[in-house]
Length: 622
Ligand SMILES: [Zn+2]
Image (cartoon, rainbow, N blue to C red):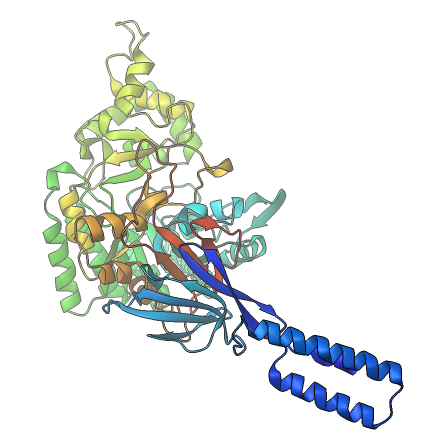
C-alpha cells in the first residue's frame, strides 16, 4: 500500500509537443518515476524482506518494483526529466515590444497567475503552457482610449470585435456614461442573460458588469450629460449656483465609485449648454481627485481652433489633465490646418498645461442625422424634437438655420458641403448601408413634382427622422487623411476607436457600423506602420498601450514588465491588417493571433476561447 501511495504522490512535468497556432506548444503532466525514487523503493523492499513480512505481501511488492523499474527504464528512454513548471504560461522567442516605445528585442514573457512574472531575453524555467511566438510581436494588450461598449458588453461579454483587435481594456464614456442615472434621470434596466438588471450609480453599473462578466477590462468616465440631466432634466434653462453644486456632488459620487474623470460632448445639447466657466468648476472636482477631463470639442468644424483653446483653458484654470477625443478638422473650409491645432497644444504643454489627444485612424466620423437639426429644436428631448419636426413653422426655421448656420454651432450638413453622398446611414433600419443621396432618391421617386416636399431634400431628412423617432446613426466623410496623419504622429496623440464591441454573428451583428468598431488597432499596425510607414512599430504600440495607461494613471497595465497585469496581444507584423470596410463592415482582422487578459488566454490562433477574465478598473484602486 505504501508503495502505491508513494507513486501517486510523485508527479513531474511531462513535455508533450502539441501544435497550437504556428508552432509546437509544450504542456501537460504525467507520472514518471525517477531513478532516485526507484532506488528508494528497492531499499524499502529489501528491508521489508528482512522484517519477515508475509510472503504474499513481499511477493506483491517485489512484482510491483520489477514492473516500475521496467516502466521507468522504458520512459527515460524517450522522455527527458524536467523540473516542476515555474510559470503558468511562457511566451517564447517573440519580438517583444514592451509598450514604452523602446526598440523591440527578441525575448520571453513569463506569466504567473494574473501577472507578468518575467520579461527577459531568455526566461529559465518552464511554463505549464508554452507558446512559441517566433516571428510574432508580443505587446501589451491594447487600451482602447475611447469606446462606446457600455451596454453591448452586457449583451455579450465576449467583446468579440475588440478582443479580435488585441484590445484588452476599454475606456467608456463621452457625453454620457453608463452611470450615474440619478435625480431627474431614470434608472437603466437591461436584460443580462435573460434577467432584468437595473442600476443608477456608476458603481452599480460596475457591479452588474462584474456579475455578467466580460472578456475585456473596463474603465469609465462620468459623462457630463448624466450629471447635467440629473439636475436639469431635459430643460435648456441656465443652471443656478445651487444646481451646479448639485452636479458637482453627483460628479464627486461617480469619482468615488472609480470614474477616471469627467467626459463631455459639447457639440450637442445638453453638453453644448455648459459654459466654459461651468466646465472649469466641474473639472475642479475631478482635479482634486486626480482624474482627467476628456472632451469631444464644442466644435470640430469652422470653430475648431476656438474649441481647442477652450479645452486648453479648462485644463489650465482647473488644473486638470485634458485628453481631446478624436481630434480632427471636420469641415472642408478648414481642411489642411491641423498644424495650427498641433501648435496650440504644443504651446500649452510648453507652459505646463497637460493637454493631449486621441484619434481613430479613419477620415470619416460617426454621428447622427439628428445632429443636422439645430440645437434649439432638441429642447425637451426626442419627443419634443419629433413634434417640432412635424410643425411647418419649425421646419421652415430649421431649414434657415441649417443652411445659413448659427454662431458657434457645428453643423454636419454644411461641414460636408451639403453633399448627401458623404453621409452613410450606419444605424439599424430600412436605410442602413445606403448613402443619403440614394435614400433621398428612393424616398422621392414616386413623388409628384408638385408635392410640397419634393423640392427640398431637408424635408426628406425631417421625415426620415420622424419615422426613426429622432435618431439615425450616420457616417460622415468630413475630414482628411493629411490632417489625421499629422495628429496621429504627435507624441501625445494616442489611439481610441470611438467604436463598440460588435460581432460578425448573432444579435451584435446589426446596422452598418463604422469599420473602426472592428479594425482600428490592426489598421494602425498594418496600414500606418507596415504599409505606409507613418509610424514606427514601437511608437504605434506605445500609443495603444502605455500612453493611454499614463493619461489615466493606470499603473500596472499598458506595459510588459514584471509585476504588471498579464494583458498581452500577440500579432504577426507581416500580415496584421483590418478587413472591415464602410460598405462591408462585418469582418474581423488578419494577423491577431493571441490575446491574454489578466493571464488568461481569450483569443487563441484567432479564435475566441470564451474566457471572460476582464475586470473593472476603478481609479486609484489598481
Ligand atoms: Zn465623439
